[in-house]
Length: 243
Image 1 (tube, rainbow, N blue to C red):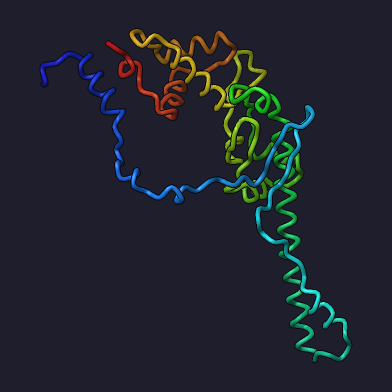
Image 2: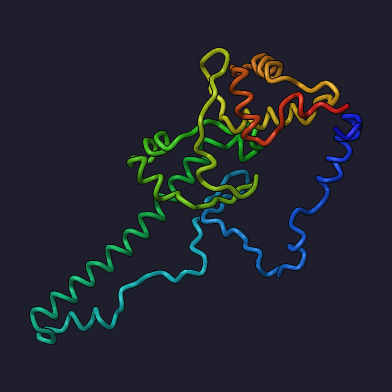
């Protein structure tokens, strides 16, 4: 309709991509930036990974000693007042124990991740192994719903970056031999790297990517490649072609 070549269209599109779609952001306050504070920190110290569950600046909950001493004094309260105080103490202890149990569960989950994902911690996302809630629940000895609640909205800081804990719970892709499995995230990383290294004038098709992956021992269909590519926000073969 414009009477120009595809190459001109691509060059114009490249220019548009350099523009800021939200120019008002440059007038925003830099103090509005919110930084993630990890709930768990994993550090490599002397060749071993050390796990620390962070509690931030939150104070530790304790029972008020003043009221504890009051309860120990005989005859200071009537029956109803004493029962009320004892009920409140029981509730307070339950809250404290629940928080400690959640913290311990978080530590155990992090320990499982470190045990299973050591290669990921050493080398990066391409070495991520498949792991799901049920596997972690079985390793820890709790129900998977407990793992789900304890890790919801929690973040872990690793040598490879900061990730939401649910990042490590994903689907798996079978190997060609049907023995070993690969995490879908690691397969996505491989697909992304292949596309980034392709010849833009002759981009790889989804079928070709599937064939290359199978040669590497990863059995994956063309349709799954297309699904992963879409999830990565990567355009189709025809849309990636440069003229």
